[in-house]
Image (tube, rainbow, N blue to C red; front, side, top):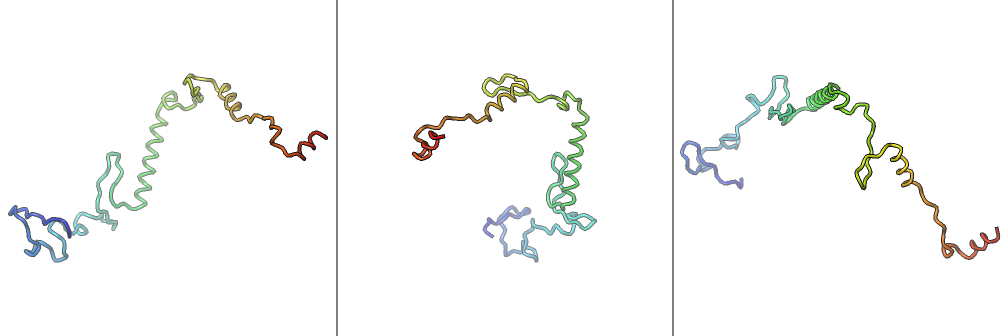
Length: 143
């Protein structure tokens, strides 16, 4: 153990590991065995930490069934909260609003569709003369 020696709570001085501060299992006085008292549940699932976060999620060593159950409950609560909102608050049934990227002004859906079609349309360019071979150029002239 590379940590500095711990102080005894009663005497306030430095403790010597050879004075018997270690238990029979080699752990120090503050490293008690947590498996026997209050650390587990009566149903056989051993959880070290049964604290919860502010949203109610159980922290620490938790089995997969509990994690899935808590996630389902959170989803149901969130869905119920949205369903309880009015349509204008939640945006249910609202039309999509589009904005011009450069100015930020609102544009209607037809204008947005036209802009996207123009952007996706590939323009046909005239190929320069030097981009073809001699034989291919002759074939174009003959036909």
